[in-house]
Every structure is written in C-alpha cells, then in structure tokens.
Image (cartoon, rainbow, N blue to C red; front, side, top):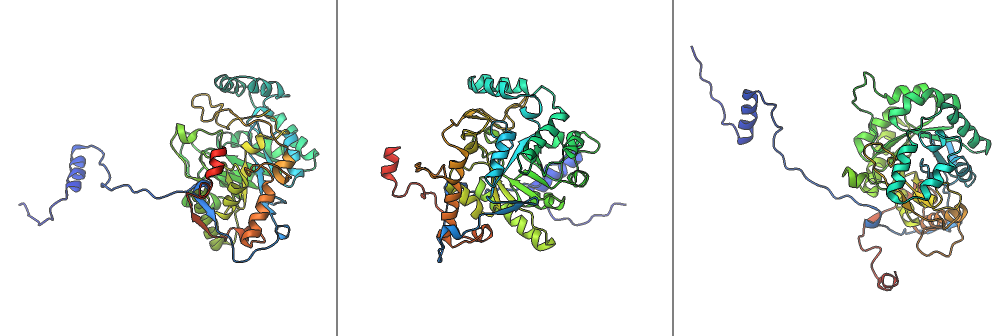
Length: 406
C-alpha cells in the first residue's frame, strides 16, 4: 500500500541538490552570492591628531615580546639579505631584536659571504637561480648552535626562525642551541593544517617540547589568530605578502592590506586577553617603508613591527644593497624577487637620525615619538587607542608641487 504525503514544492536550488544525490554526484552547496568587504593599507588611512599633546621626549616606545623587553618596537626580518649574526648584534644594541633565518645561507655555509657576493653581482633572473642552487646545500645542525652563540657573544638576545615543515626536524638542534626566542614562520600559518603526515606539526606540542618563548606567523584573520593563541604562542606575526621582495600576492593572489589585517588580529588579541587574562602581542610584518607606515601599524593595534627592506638598505646589512624574500629560493614556485634597495643609510640613522631626508625613510623612532606626542599617547598601548580615518587623499591633498618635483 502506498501512502501519499503532502510536500512543499522544491526550490530550483533544492531540485539541483536532490538530483545530484539521486545521480550519485556530490552535490553543490546551496547557492549564495559572495560579498566583498573593504580592506585598507597604509596609504588608505590617516591618524587623527589628539585633543591633548605631549612632548615627544616624554613618550615611552618600549615593548615586551616573548619575555624580551625591547627599547624600541622593531624586529628585523628573518631574511638572508637583512640578518646575519653581526647585524643581529647591532640591532640588539640599538634596542630592537633581529631574527636569524636558520634555513638560510648562515646555517648552510661556513662563510656565506661568497654566495651573497655572487647574488649581489648577478642580474635578477640569474639571482633567483643562484639562490635556488645555494638552498640545495643541506642545513648543518652545528651551524645553528654556532650562529646562536655568535649573537649571544655580542651581548644581545638571540632570536631564530624556521618554517613549519622544518620545525620538528630541527627542533633538537634548536633546543640545544637555546636561543632566547623561537619563531615559526611561513607565508600563511594556521593551528589547523592537514597533510599526508600521520601527525603533522602540532604547535602546542612543539612549544611545550622546546620550552622557548615562541612567535608564530603569518596570518591576517580573527579566527586563525584566536586558534594560534590557544596553542600557547607568545606573539603573532601579521601580514601575507605585503613586503617589497615578496610576490605571493601576484603569484597566489592572496593577502589582506596591512591596516585591516592588523586591526583584525589585534581585535583577536584583545578578545583572547579578555577571555584568558593572557596578553599575546601582535607584530605587523611587512609593507612598512616610512615613519608614517610604522606609526599607522601601531595605531592599527600592533605592539611592534617587523621590517625587512628598510634594514636591507643599511650599510651594516649583509645583502650589499639587495634584498630578497624568504620564498625566493623555492625550487618549484618562487614567490619572491631580488630587489635593489641600495646602501644609502646606516642603522643608527635609519632608527634615530639625524636625517636630511624628507620622505620619512630615516629616523623611524623620531617619527614615532613625534606622532605619539601629536596624539597625546605616552605609551604604545595608548597609541593603539588613537582614532584613524579612511583618507585616500592623505598623501596627495595639497601636494601638487611635491608631485611635480618628484
């Protein structure tokens, strides 16, 4: 006996789904219109002056990252053209912290100077080929310990970086070297990752095993940030593809402009702090060219910034006036390019001046203190509360004569 029951008519979308089930084809999800939201970078926004001002010399620009008290809120990027042991020592003596790339040339060659000189003396296409070849030389565990000791012998904290695929393999050597800060960094890092490995990298386990304060990156979103903080990290790097030497945005099409990315991740930090009472600092990594960019990153919510290309232009940097991204030597899909930044400044002038340059590329700390004074912020935490506006004309309004000059 057949029983008939009443059923509401199917919508066209439901008919497609039901038909797919009946035919054995995996059904498509319910149709929906994808929406886009606005996202902003440094050139799209402006900092609003405060109702109170203070003298710049009264400001406190220090910050705390991974147990390290930094006199200035700046880290040098873990890139071969930027950081070697000598440069790490100099940045530390200036009050910041530099991160050494343990998968780079410093831990593959006893003396990387020859490779660095070859890269600097070649054309752009050949430079990538040279780097790809050089990076086939195995990483040597004994050089990890040697480089960390060289930095420590200079009287500063040693910070080192690896990518997630090599984090477990190099963990024993890194732990034995006992750096002060451990950074796990890739183009995009998440707490949830699937691979062919039976047990991929589990950050919580790695952090517990290493017993070294750990920074992790990079990310740009609220949910991913919260989940990484729950793994026990001590700091979060923000930014996908904004650096001058990185081409991930062109090659992969992924990324979020730095102001919006920093605001989103800083909100995650504050929500996580409210839930747990544990404060996880945010570091805006990449895309910072001037003092104005630096200040906007901190107003967006960052506790510090990580800088690559500006440091690569210092006389003390190992890249001899050139700079390239961490993904440039990738054997199959390079996502970086060697850029010429020149050697036009010193580390001291870049950070503290004095300077005769009018484009904001030198005396970054002076710019920060003056900005803080203009908005009435005594500390970086105060600066994070400062208002910003969307202002696409901020760099062109009334600047006709400057533009003609340039």
